[in-house]
Length: 311
Image (cartoon, rainbow, N blue to C red; front, side, top):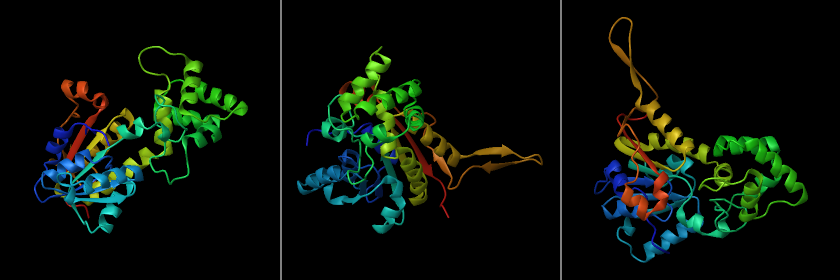
C-alpha cells in the first residue's frame, strides 16, 4: 500500500480541534491518512469516498488493525452528498468536517486511472469508475466551443481556443486514446517553455469536468455547513486556485460583515449559518514538508467555526 503522507496533517488537526469522543466526517477519505489520525486522537470518523479502490485499501488498513481503525466507518459516495450520507448513517450533526480536494497521490501514481501524463494510460480520469463519462469521451466528442470553455474555465488555459480547435481537427483522423498521446499533442501544438508541462492545465480541466469537482465542492460546502454542529469546525485543503477561490468566497459569505445603518448602529449581512474564520489567510506547508512531500507545495488550508445552528 505504500506510505501515504497526508498533506498539512498537524495543521489540519489543529484547525479541526479534534476532541476525544467527537464525531468527524472526512468527505474525501482517500487512503485515510487524515481520518486515521483523527481516530487515533479519539474521534469517531465517517469516511466518504467515491473511489471504490480507495475504500478497498482503507478496508485493508482496518482489517490490519491500524491505530484508531475501529472508530472509522466507511461510505461510498460523493462529498457533494455529505449531509445526506451522514444522515443515512445516523449522524444528525458533526463536530468537524474535512475535505482534502483534488486527485490523490495513489490515483496519480497508477497509469491505468489516466489522471497523469507522466504515466501513460487510457484517457479515463474517473474518480468513480462506475460513472459513464470519461476524459476520452470529452476530448473525442465535445465541440471545439465546449472544449474551449472547459480548458478556459477549469484549467485557466490562455491558449484554450487554439488547443480546442487543434484537438478537433486531429481527432477526425484518429481519436485520442491515451494520456501520453494527448500530452504529446498539446506540447507539439503550443510548444514548451519553463518547468511546467504545457498539458498540465488541460489535464486539470478535463479531470475537474469529468468528476464535476466544482459542483461537488459547492454542494459539499453548503451541506457540510448545515451538518456541522454549533462550535464545530470545517477544514478544506485545496490544490488549485479555482477551488481555493470557491472555498474562500463561500466561507467569507457565511462569515459575513457588519454594515452601518443610517439611523445609527449596525447590522450583520451574510449567508446563514454564520461562521467565524479560523485564520484570515490560508495555511500552507512548511519548507520542510514541501521538501518531504512535493504534493504539499500547492496545498492551501482554510477553516471556519460554526457559530450558530442552521435552521
